[in-house]
Length: 253
Length: 122
Image: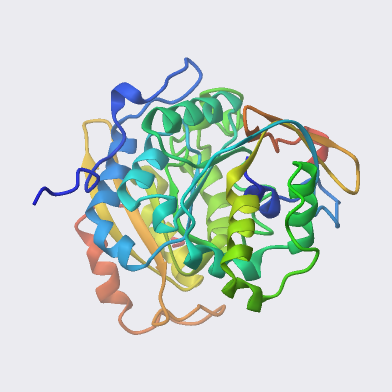
């Protein structure tokens, strides 16, 4: 019997639309899709119903996610947002070229959606603007918004994290691309304080940058941190997964 | 834009306390058939603001949804079909979403609502 071709299908570059003001699929996009593929079995076991990509750009990632998890017939629905009006249009075309459906909304992160979608998102994927830049470049018009991340590349990431916490369902998980300069260890600690476990799904190093795709999910074993409490036991072994990587450690983290 | 999305969007203007539902103005709409998935409908039903869906579907010229709905109706295939059609098969291509409190107009173009705010609205 033939294996259905849909298994492991992802978006095709030749069908991805482009526009001079929209970020084209690049190493970080490929790393994120690789992470979703690598985690496919786990994703399917969670039986996701609503998936969201924040910052969909060319549409490469949300299209791939829809091809990986299957669509309406499986009862999965997709939302995608971008702050760049050109990007949502390009995403729409990319989705159409692959014959997949997603609801595309032009907005900042999940503004306008976060109230009603609270606790409903099962899979959240984000390739945020993570490049350290001067703060005034953050959220600029056009393609700059796709990469300008402000100080330590954290300005937009730090705005996304609380929104992610609000949107994710009990079984929800977040896949996010980070750069070493973003101090991913500290991001994991911040999310741990909100009750999330985390794991590096994919790591890529190039001459210029070291990328990680980190998965976050709610874990009942992670104690929500109260102010001034010492680290729970087991913290050391949890931290050890990061020791192999050249994460910068802030003295205050 | 599907009515599922309409049901999940609210006005994000700073200071607006009653931003849901956004009033729907339709200039162009299309229907796209998709497979009916009863499990999805049953799971999403409790999250749907029914009146907003009824009003939005009527704005699109689909009058079949009952004024009120309760979970027991999900056992009826006829009800599921209508719920499915209104929620997932009706698309607004061109039009606008209007903030119920301020009257601010969020355009929908090529099926994509634009919820971007001006600087003084954030």
